Length: 61
Image (cartoon, rainbow, N blue to C red; front, side):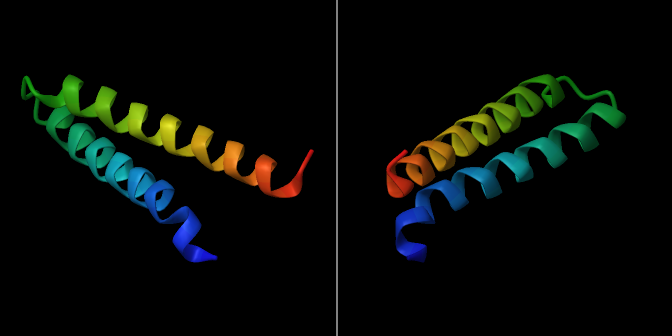
């Protein structure tokens, strides 16, 4: 069962890492912070949408 959601979990983990790194860089006022924050939030949004779609397909709603 976990194999189905492996790519979704990786997207969420990668998004969380980018978001945390972006926040740390934002605190230090470094220029790459905005890009990392945007990428992190995009990865998390795509991961969550993919998870919702997979769960809805599995439950046959």
